[in-house]
View 1: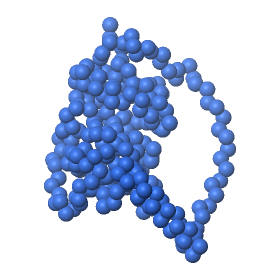
View 2 (view 1 turned 135 degrees about the vertical axis):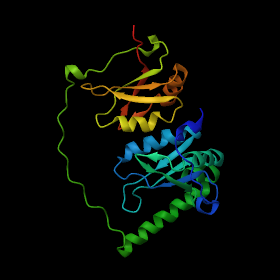
View 3 (view 1 turned 90 degrees about the horizontal axis):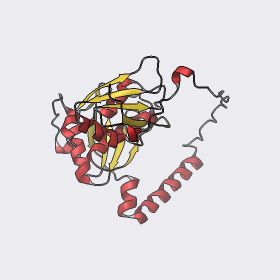
View 4 (view 1 turned 180 degrees about the vertical axis):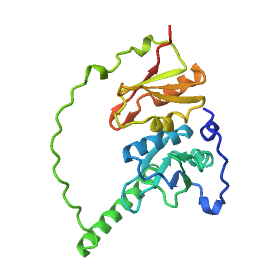
Length: 248
C-alpha cells in the first residue's frame, strides 16, 4: 500500500528532532477530538496506523489528564518513524494530530525486550497505589448506579441484514459493509477507509440501518481495503466487508 495516499492534499509539517523526541516504538499523539467515543477512537487509530506496520496496542483514556491524547505502540522503530512522518498533522475529525515519539517505553515493548523489567515496573506501580491509598491521596471510585436491563429489540422487517455469500460475488470497486452499529456515521467510516489508496467515498443507505457502501477507483484497490478491514469490529459489532453486487 502507498502510505502517501493517506495524507493527500495536506502540506507536511516540519518539526525539529528535539520536539519529536528520540525514536522509539511508541508514538504519543495529542490534539485529538475529545468527543470521539473511546472504543471507536482506538479502532480508528489502529486501522490508520496499522497501514505502516504491526500495531501492538493503542492506549487512550477519557480521564481529565489524558483527554485528547493516545499512545500507539508499533513492533519496531522503523514502522513508528514512517507513521510519524506521514501522519503528522493528519486531520482526524477536522483536528490535525500532533505526533511525537514517547519518552517512555510501553509495557508491550518492555514485555518483548525484557520481561523481568516489566514485572519490576508492575511491582513499583502496585506499591505506589498502596502508598497513595494509605496516605489518602487515592480515593476509591464511587460505585456506578445500577442500570436497568434494556428489553431486547427485535429487528424490524426493513432492517433485516442482507444474507450474501461473499464467495459468490466477483471483485468490484464498491464494497458492501454489513452489521454496522447504529451510531457509526459516514465520517467515522471515511476515517477508516480513506487510509487505503484509491478511496472515493462512503455512501450510507437512507432508511436501512447497519449497512453502507465504500467506493474505490479500481477493483484491485477495493480488494486491498477489503482484506485490510476483514474482521474489523466497531462498538462490539463484527463488521462484514464484502464486494458489492455489480449492477446487471
